[in-house]
Length: 248
Image (tube, rainbow, N blue to C red):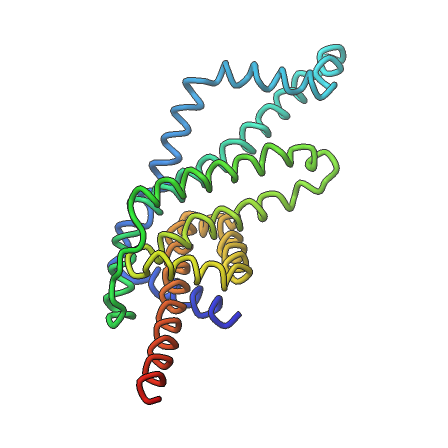
């Protein structure tokens, strides 16, 4: 637990540094613009899907018979928001993980972990595959849990989805430059629950207005600190074992 709080505190410290100011905003602005344009272009097709969904849910015909146009419009807009926000979040996180992460790793590693040797156990291809996997499962979580919204339990879905997305997307990239493949697997396996905890904690920031603009970069920084801290600890333990073996 101490590693989680240390990582989030270090991420906040880095967030307010001027050096990363230029990379804080552009990923989310690109994502917002991308999906606004997509929403405008495909609005009619999406409206047809919403009508189909309402009919399948058994309330489309009721709304038509009772002439409740404003209710239909309100439900349609609500569905737009429910789809739009996750798409923006996912796109921003992917942009951050693939394009921004290397710069963040350099800033953090050069200042706080200069003694860590870079083993390059990860790769760009691995990052892309990991991003596709994380995005696919994230979207699947939203789709599969749609019925939960009808009974009020859907309120937990965004937090579970955010926790999964964050830990799945950033744990690999945070270690990809410094750790070996074996070290990446070992750290992820040994800290499975802590990674979920950090994913949930950073995910909460995504739902706070204004602060959510900083959430992707903040999340990336937190996972970099968490990963490199554990890598430093792992290698320190290995060095102690090697020294003991030599002495014996």
